[in-house]
Length: 272
Image (cartoon, rainbow, N blue to C red; front, side):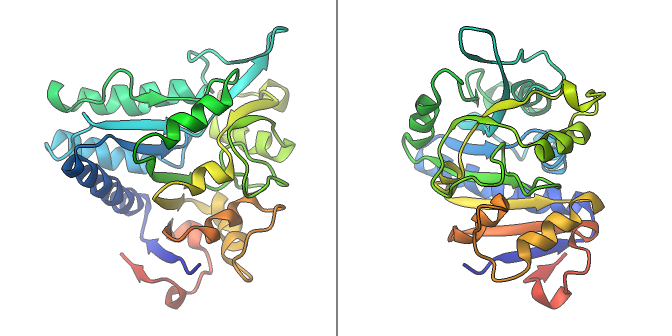
């Protein structure tokens, strides 16, 4: 599938462009009287988008009263009786990130009638991954998924190299390359052995059911991941999970110039 590739001057413009797509889906769902489900990662990648959404909230241009944020993944631990999600108070908890950086931050700038509801931050239960699949498929399903690229191995959510294209939500063993990437994503980690070795994650097939995908990358650290994802025939191979986006009929890349690297301007559909 051909991709729209947008190369923006910096992270602010990346955030604004992707927030435009979020706003589009929010407005469309409101017009239909439906809940707008947004698939979302934790970490550094979505922060410029959240900055742009927070600005819209302050300006009175955002309504999240009919929205839900479905988180892509969470770290899990084996407590002897089975897998359980880490505490949301942990500095590396993806659910904790969602509550702080999405719900609390955006709601602080919104009037009561436009705030994200208390039950509108979703995360998979490692004891019932299939239940998350069913929840994400309810109604109109996920309207929009924001996709981040793993810098070292092209992981998406916690899906490691070798993941099947039709994979669904499940508990996975994290690749060492993914865990090393997360040392930078969550700077509270001091050493690799502090990074949990397992997580519950949506599958590539789960993400592909969404109506639209936006692949976001910014900073020099993502340059090689962008190059590999966009080089060659642009097809999916299990050794580089991020290539799965090429199988989706509605996907676009939003890159800053640092992440785009040597990507030729003429290969981009537009630049802002």
